[in-house]
Image (cartoon, rainbow, N blue to C red):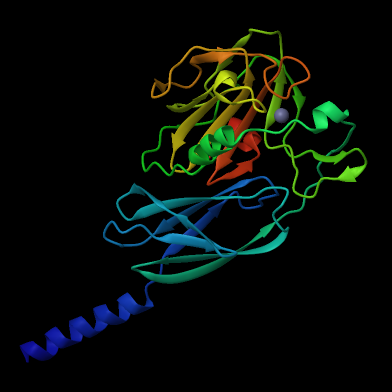
Length: 281
Ligand SMILES: [Zn+2]
């Protein structure tokens, strides 16, 4: 009798296991282009983190608490609005969930470049260093709560603007950040805690971006601050939210003193506004 009961228990538990899938919750519930999707996944994967695949790109989830994981999915003006399928996969099985990405209108700018400016190109060194920064997937999460304003200046350009250069629509271009304008040398603060993963200097080849600070906030979230006049931190420093990290400038391809802050999630520039106000958990 005992073996039969045991078999029954194993059978039931096997049934429950094969029928079990991750429980998935996506916020915000009504995302629009530029938003970061926070995908919370619950299951008993014994510490093996599940992944989320969207349109052929696989995103790693990180452990929030035992049996609870979270992946961040970036969207941008280049994301196709409408139905997006998130395929969750891991030891607990596969689970697909669809979300609707709302369309959004971005401003259009018409830029006329003089021939000397049109010819300004960056260096391999600066592009490689920035690629390395955006490729970081540090398991530790450093940010907490809504992000802080990196400058007390006024916002001179918002995220997502599209452009025509000399009358030609720039297909892949969108403004990958938010610009703040204030006086030359005005302070720049860390929008969130993290590690200074990049100090890029004009003298080392940051000719397009100018003096640059890259912050690793952890779990695929990074900040890039460009056009600085100077630095208040060194590479490798840990910083807190609101800490002075540098000074506004007009180095690189800048028409006047301004801070360009780009916020990247898994290599894609997302709108920092939801991160600043609601925060992303
Ligand atoms: Zn900018």
